[in-house]
Length: 589
Image (tube, rainbow, N blue to C red; front, side):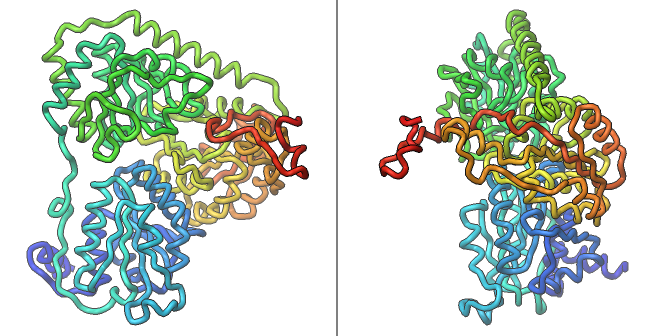
C-alpha cells in the first residue's frame, strides 16, 4: 500500500505509467468525487471495475435522466460538481433533459460520455450516436478526448469549465480509449482551476456604493449565486445597513433567511406579494447572484412589480448574465461574496452615519404580515377532499429547519413557492426555468446523498410523479429515507387551467387515471400512505420524518383548485376559420 501511495504522490510531480481508466479515476479522486450516478454499460466497464477499490461509489438508477437530476441536487447542496455516466448512445441521450435542466439552473456537472469506438465511428454501429452534437446546445462546453494520452488532461478541462461556466460539461471519450498504457500526471485542482474570481472592477464597486449611499428606497434581490458563494451573512449586513427589503429570486427561497426582519420572500410566479409590493417602488435595486430571468421577473397576481425606473446594480460571476434581461446602471463581474463584502466595507466608509429608515422597516413588516395572513386564509377555503394550499401550509409548518425540499414543475409545485420558507441555505432545490417534470424525486435522492443528516422531501404532482416513481427502487436499494409528497388531483392541472381560461373547459389530455400510489410504493419496498384530510396528513408526515425507509404520501387534493396560468402572455383566445371548427371559436361561445 505504501508503494502505491508513493507512486500516486509522484504522479503529481512526474509522469507515471497507468492505464487511461486509472488516469480518469485518479483525476476524479483528486477532484474529491466520492460517487457517480448512472446505469452500468460495457462502454466504460474497465473504469467501472476500478471504482470500489478507489473508494468511489457507483449509484445505479432506474433511468439515466434521474442520474443527472440527482447530481444537480447534490451539487446545489454541497457545491461540488456531480458526475454522471451511462452507456454510449441511448444511455447518454437519456440524460438530455436532465442535463438541459442543470444547464438552465447553472449547476456544475461533468457528464462522462463514452462514445463509439474509434475503429467503427461512422458505420452507424450498435448504440452509435454523435453525442457531442446532441449535447452542444444544452451544456456549457463539450470536451472530446482526442487520444488516450489526453484522458486526464481533458477531464481536468471538463471540471475547470464546469466550475468556471457554472454548468454541465460533456466529457466525450471513445470507448476504446479506456484501454492501453499511458504516462501522465495526476494534478490537484488548484493546479488547473481557480476557486474564486474576486470582487471585479474597483470602479464599478465605487459606483455601486455611491448609488446605494444616496438611495431613498433601496431594495435587494438575493439569488442562487449568494447561496453558492456563502454570501448570505454579508447580504444581511447590507440590508440592515440600508434598511432595505430583501427578496429572493424565483424558486431560490433559501437565498435569504425567511425569519430575518428584512425578508419579504420570493419574486416570480406564485411568489410573495410582500416581495412584489416592496420592490415596485425601489429607486436602487441591488441584484446579487441572479441573472434576473425573464420568467422570474414577470408580473404576477396582476402586480407589475419589477421597478421600471430603478437604477440596477447587478452582481454576477458570469459575464453572459450581466444586463442580459434588464438594463443595468452598474454591472459587477465577480464573486457574490467578495463583491458584497467589498461593497459593504466601502459603504461604511462612504456613508458611516446612515440611520435606520423606520418608515421602510414598518412597510416591510406590514407587507410580510398581510401576505402571511392571506396565505393562511387562502389555504382555509373549503375544498373536497383537501385544498392543495392547505396541504402545503401544513407541510411547511412541520418542516424542520434543516429539511431540504425539492419541488417539481406543475400546479401545486409552483404554488409551493408561496409556502416554502427556509432559514438555512442550500435547502430549496427547485426544477427552475427548464420546467421539466420528473425532477423533484431524483433530486430529493441526490440531496439525501449529499446531506444524510437532513430530511429530504419532494413536492411533486401526480403527473410528474408518473415520470419519476420508478426511482423508489433506487431509494429503497440505497436505504435513503426520502419523503415523496405526491399531490394527487388526477390531472395535469397547470395545463388544465389553460383549458379552463382559454378553451371553454374543453379538456383534451388533461385527466390522469392513476393507481393508488401508496400501494405502488409498498410493493416496491417503501412505506406508502394515502391521505385525504389535514389531520391524517400531519400524522403521516410526522411519521415519515422519523422513518428509516423511503415514504410516499399519496395526498388526495381538490383538482378544481387551480393556480393562475404560467404564462398569460403566451396564450390567446382561440379563433377558428374553417366552418367545421366554428363552434370552437371564442366569439361563438
